[in-house]
Amino acid sequence: MEPLIVFDGVSYWYPNAGQPALRNVSLKVPQGEFLLVVGSSGSGKSTLLRSINGLVPHFTGGRFRGDVTVCGHSTRRTPLRVLARCVGSVFQDPENQFIMSEVTSELVFGLENLGLGRDEIERRMREVAEYFELAGLYGRRVHERSSGEKQRVVLASVLAMKPAVLVLDEPTSQLDPAAAEDFLYFLRRLHEEFSMTVVLAEHRIDRVLPFIDRVFDLDSGRLGSPEDILPNSVNAPPIIQLSQRLHKKNIDIGNPRSLQDARGRIENSGISFTPKSWLVRPLTAEKIASIKDLTAAFNGRRVLDSVSIDLYRGQFTALMGKNGAGKTTLVKHLNGLLKAAEGTVMVLSLDVSTTSVEQMAHLVGFVSQNPNDYLFQETVLKELDFTAENLGIPCDADRILTPLGLAGLRNAYPRDLSGGERQRVALASVLVGDPELIILDEPTRGMDASSKQRLTGLLMNLCVRGKTILLVTHDVEFAASSAERVIVLDGGKVVADGAAHAVLNECELFMPQVSQIFPGKNYLTVEDAMEGLK
Figure 1 (tube, rainbow, N blue to C red):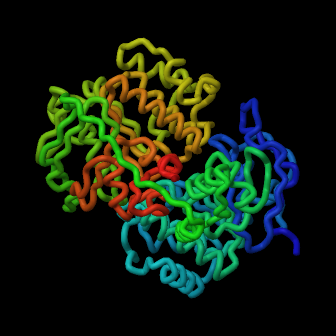
Figure 2 (figure 1 turned 135 degrees about the horizontal axis):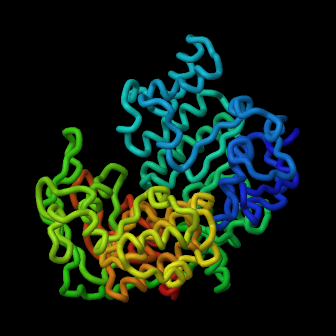
Figure 3 (figure 1 turned 90 degrees about the horizontal axis):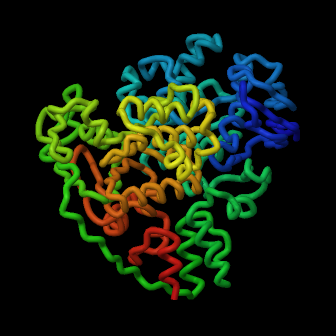
């Protein structure tokens, strides 16, 4: 059987780029395979996916060498409208894929552009709506739906056109663990029930490990089974890291793909682990921020309900919760982007509701979910200079860029960078101001494990210097390895607040993999488990 997707010696340079985004890639994907694409930030994962659907080079321009064939079509010589019939695409941010403002119109938009008859459009729409449990959203505005619902609407609208290949670029990066699990449940069904060919780029490999067939690592150029490739990947999930660490201790638990499998193998191995006792660092006496009885509502819906939180100097706090829990609304009250209608928000001695956003920028640094909100200069260095000039302070760029792994990109055009690199540039532009309180809203989107480790080190060093970190995240493993305190919001209320090990080991929705493998041991990371190995 001929492979469905073929990369034949593909190299690609974006316009004005000195280095190729893809270098001599050769790859064959057969019908019905679930292929995971891994690699470090900037390795070319998104570029490879966009080479399958033809956006590279039709939309991006640049120089393209070699050939990509999909369903018998050379993507270089085939118009995008033709490729769209055989390749469906789902990207990180569903907002960027919506064409229409209402769910039903979005579901039928692609079908209408295929020129199908009204009866066929109606039949396909109802099929995908039922399959993805969207019938209850008919007539609703897409931008008012939850992130999980938006991503399902995108997936349904793509699959209504019956593509042979589905490519997905970090599709769960904006979803909470429950919404991500729901999305991947549908993806797994598509693959197993309809033999859909799936090519997926995903940093959080633990979510898809149980059902992928093969892995292509862009860093090494190797293609093989998860057991062959992932142990050497920069993004190896905790379950694989644990297996590798135990193997070095001459303890063989094989290659578990699920948490249940890992628990069973460890129990059958006869090895035992000692529970961990945690030392909690005492708080400093100085409050950096104080939120009292904060209530906020939008369009008649209460988003925050009498929330009270204090943040202390030098503390690293993770703010977690489902999509729509009120996390972003809460943190925007700390820098003045939103003003308190009920309750009070104080940062140091300033009442945020009566202080300008410009004044707050000297005290509070805020990095939003979308790094493109910050990037409009010609180079990375000019992004930092712009912030410094507006705040009237000098700019020591190397001090900020080097720890973030960006020193070599100081002259790069920011919007040509990968998602993880753009996220780090946005953070760098905020750190120029040396704020007392640093708020990061989903900063690890698109970041590989080594980038996360650098970010953790940088943020912890900032805490040592007396800065206060508030991290909004769905990335459970990142929170487990970095935060000392975790606050959980649900329905606009604080439902948990305490030491990270206490909250994450009790909160089922946000429990790290190692905590699930070792219930009752009080572990958060692989390192904790190895320390507890008797």
